[in-house]
Length: 147
Image 1 (cartoon, rainbow, N blue to C red):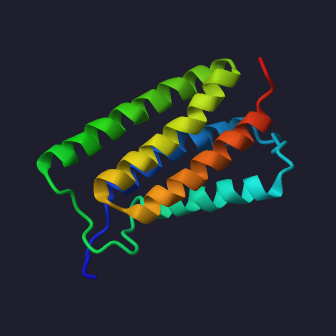
Image 2: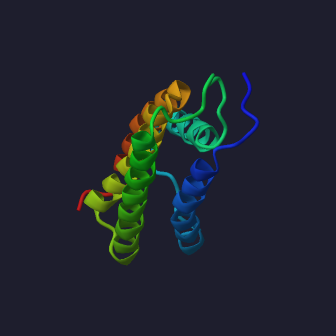
């Protein structure tokens, strides 16, 4: 396997997804995880950190590239639109915490990871995105009261 480079676009996407989460963590320092299911918490965290790493590091991928210009454009515009939606919904969620917004914030990163993994044929990222999505939606539902 010869790579010689890191997916800079993937790294930027991860950084842009983390910014609102860092802001939220700073504003809500005392918030605790209300999900008591250790297995689902573990699935979420394994999926989360695997996706964060695999977005920019092509582990176990023989050819880390797009098969066409169209796929690259789809990768950039698709992830750009999903990131924009993520930031807009996060801004709305910071103003007023609603269950629907929280669930959207759980699903959007999963979509970003899935889109990236599928277009780059990075199957470990796809599998990690599924783990993360299942765990993140479950944990989010347990942490956000029904409104």
